[in-house]
Image (cartoon, rainbow over all chains, first blue to last red; front, top):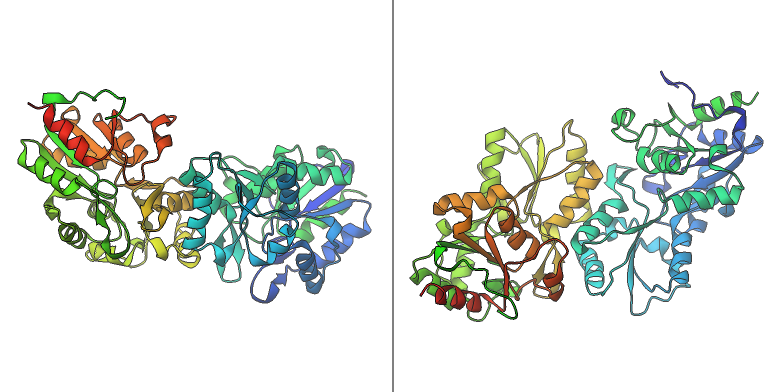
Length: 271
Length: 271
């Protein structure tokens, strides 16, 4: 960790939550590539006495397909360890009687199989990528503007992410477009929603101060976790940019080169 | 005017500014269609002692082509009477040494012929319609995020407008998407920018209280004009929606069925 003190979780640390894209792997053509040292780092965490969960705003694949992808890259990981926005959204939709118009990536559609989608009374957007066409956005907009009380759910609030060929606009940008056009505030399901982080803590049975979030997204991973009372560590991989280290509102509890370095330091402090 | 008192410009009124799309005509396939009574209403205004200007955020055509379109629909109008964002933007770009990356409709490109576009140091977006593709938005985003001080100019800040087949997202929605992704505030050129309204007033040589804006867009036409000290009248054509009449922040000085009704009332008050 260059020029920063260690956040000081030390021996009180009981659980670690890892963001996935940009921490474990970089996305890209053909399913992406594991970030150097990250496969081994996950193994070390699993061999330790720390609890481990994975937390992603990935909304291009359903969880099964997503975990399969990670396994093919070499990661030891199972579906029950992974928290993603779509299942959380399905629970909210059913609980509150919402029938969504979906603007999501095709690969995510199976997550919504059990949800009534007739005569929509809300819109759900995920990272639809190429499906964010002018036509599809207008269609989602028309559903919203036609409702007496327009309700928009956004699977995450990310600004952008790193693709194989560069940075790409994330779902949060399109969420803002629809918010502005319809004069409404979207409900974010997924990072950085406190409800979402809390559900991961509940699953581990831990208090916020006992857990550490490691991510590449300063605002959504680090800031989101900090808002929940956790420590947040940023890695200099994925969508990290040097200007993150002098951000106006979010300051990471620490910044490390990559997950491998983070895990080595975490485990060293426990002995 | 149903159930509202006349705003009371009366005999002190010296000039009228008309929004175009949704007031003079409805857009649609084949160039759109004149709104009933609006051709005659423009004639009546021109025959009166009032000054008349047209003010549009149209950014799909250059001014010459746009005025030609209006003439074909039957309107008596000339280029020198029309104020649109692109020429205003060109002036700003040259004055401040900006070389734009353009995300605008093809028909607008000729307006920027005289501007240096090599090695861009800002982005200009207009209502690019079908050109608002995922790829083109990512491209504009990458230009911005690659700049040390990202600068975004938006030709208008409209939320949506009426197309032949329904409502469509306007440039303001995409402006918000890029603002959020890049953590910046765009500079709006065109309505509702006070600079833009002021340039129209200057051209007429009038003070704000001597002029009346008539538009279908409550926030950008009516609210924008009111912010400049003008009265603002909304017509119930174009993108008008009944909920506009109970908007939380903008209240029109009057609401009328269409331009024909507005002009009849204005002229009646002058006798």
